[in-house]
Length: 237
Image: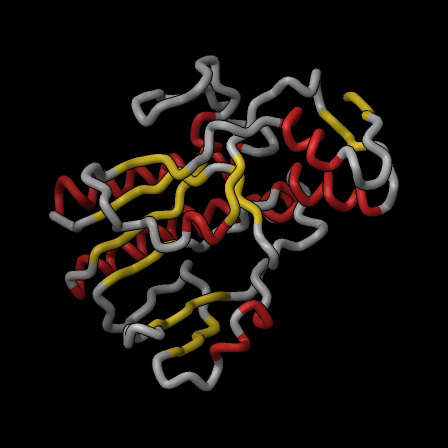
């Protein structure tokens, strides 16, 4: 917006919070629409950043049907909008499309190892279907699409009850509690700060599907960083 672009934010506030963008309200280049992407949207745009979907496990498992609808019907509506107005679309996908991978690290050619009926399936499979829709619209309708598989991202506006490892570790450290680690603690996770990936969607990317991640981090490294705050003992599950 500071460069003169007009930005329209569409959110149903199922998990999003209005205060995250309230500092932009009143800006001449900013518009906020309270709308659910499961319903068709009729606006004129030239780029669509399809970020809609609960991403926190407690949130997407709270209403799995809504999560599925957002990632399937919502994606279909956004692709339909892109086709109608000639916009290009970026889908915010996830590393969860790989499920419980049998290959480490994963590259974009890996198909994944996903449970289609587990408690996380509404999110994992919803994103996989969304990627398939993007591929179909690109091949059949000529819609210009990009799919960004975003790994574990954190930032200053993350909710403390997000339910993922970064917020869990920070909250437990601040409260002086042992850090809860599921498994052996040697699992790898790719962490990145949200500011580092914002704006990378269309810049310098020559492929239609790609990963946004930092492969140099893991749970042990995070634990060492938090060791000086609170109780760094572990509870393993």
